[in-house]
Length: 438
Image (tube, rainbow, N blue to C red; front, side, top):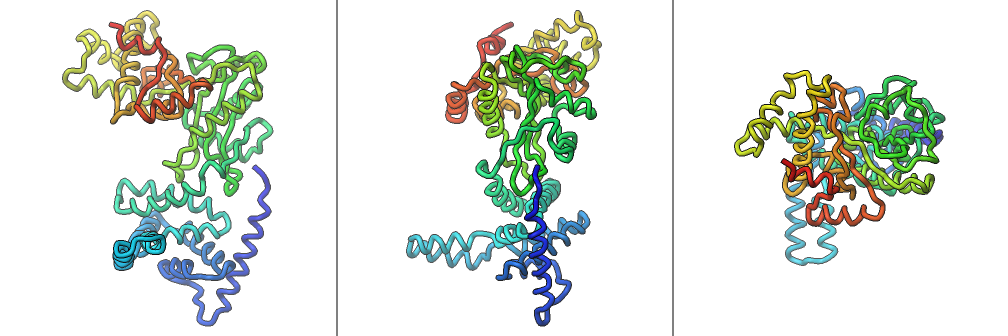
């Protein structure tokens, strides 16, 4: 979101480094890939190292899919810790435990590829290249699980580079450069932005959009959140996405509804920014608009229908025969377009959603990934909304149901501690009573 004059400096230094490399006696213009990696690790000069890093990044970007898989395999096989060295260091520590032998053991077990990744970052725009590399690696992992140790090292490095201390929160509005606004079109993962008119409506006075950025990726949002400023809690998504809806007065708003949160960089999967983003945005909004009293989400329940199908296929599911018949008719009736026909579905499905959110667990955490995210951040389950998202995607995933998770400033930390220490799911009385209703 700002000019990057330093990039020209890095390019100039890398150019000078290339001249140094070419001037060396016997320096080869074209190295094998494994030799290029080894040379980068061994290079003591900063300018020459930048030139080598730039060359390696350029070689990678020109590779085919199979060549990239071979590159990651090379990192896994040729740049792992030396087993004999690790054993010697471990024996030394066992024989004489102390800070010196512990340091030797720590150095021995660190894979050389971690330092190689760090040195790749010396290339101009190296951070972006490394994030893109990990995105490629993640796509390869399902078919090539042997590359998992390489991914562990990429994630370890990126987690340290993208910790909260380096992130910058920026508000996105209509004055934001078009380059960044275009990224929102690309990265919006919850509710598709349908053209510039839709974008403008989402950035009007009664809306807010905030994103985290990293200094090394100034034009690339890492994660962004969209918020509607309303007089009361929203129970349906369509009014919030209506481009013809009148713009409200933010000074009259009492409720901030977070209706979309999108992660942007596939290469940063597993590195969480959402909890920091929500808490900081709540603080920012509370300072800007002191009259806001309620901070809540309008969230999808993406796996509700999948869970229901598994439930109904199992033994002892606890549903009555009438309820089973109704639930199995979800895809075979026209109830979605008929309010009268939809009435019997509402009670059963809303109760089913409450059971899914409160009782369906993986370990001691909720099965639902959205619930795990918000409850882990200190939110509570406030309300279950029937037919809140009647879009094809919403009906397919959750029969149109959406959920409000509430963030109450005085309870966030207490809820978080109860969740992480005891697995307690905090929910309103109106949601909890649904478990007991028959």
